[in-house]
Image 1: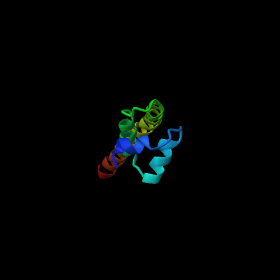
Image 2: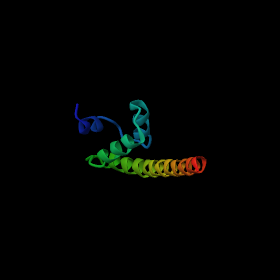
Image 3: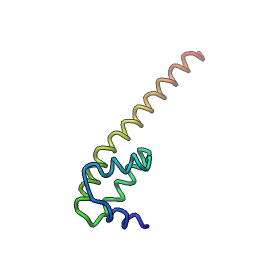
Image 4: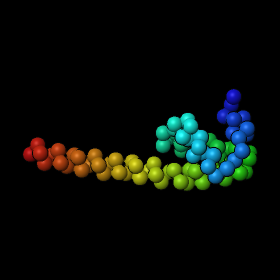
Length: 84
């Protein structure tokens, strides 16, 4: 079944993308890709919920990258102090 056909068979709701993400065990990056793919839906409700989903998930993904970067920077600083 194609992705577009799959989306057309589902009833759009505010929780649809979150529920699918949990069932499919998507990573954060996959969630964003899934939401972006749904932007092309001909169903205006699906498109609207996809936009909401990406708006919710994208900042979380970016923050996780920022937090990871800060953690790695702190770890590098601690490591350099221990070596010196």
